[in-house]
Amino acid sequence: MDLSNTHFLWASVFWGAVASGYFIYGWRQRAAIPLAGGAAMTAASMMLPAAWMSAVCLGIMFAVWWLMKED
View 1 (cartoon, helix red, strand yellow):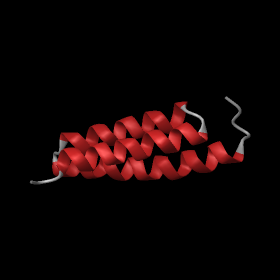
View 2 (cartoon, helix red, strand yellow):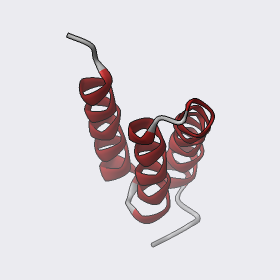
View 3 (cartoon, one colour):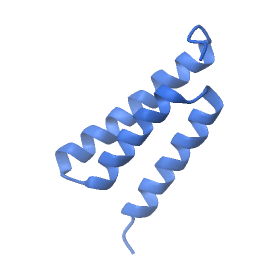
């Protein structure tokens, strides 16, 4: 993984910030789904290239929303 790639760095910073928000929200509200989503997004923001990172993180955000929605 080339860490000098600016697309990777900016995507990692952005998705890492979103993931930390999900993680902190899940921790404080004692909600397991956003907590797990934040942890998964954090892992994705460290391991995947920029395009895949964005796709996976958007998918995780959709999954968290879908699992948390009330009927």
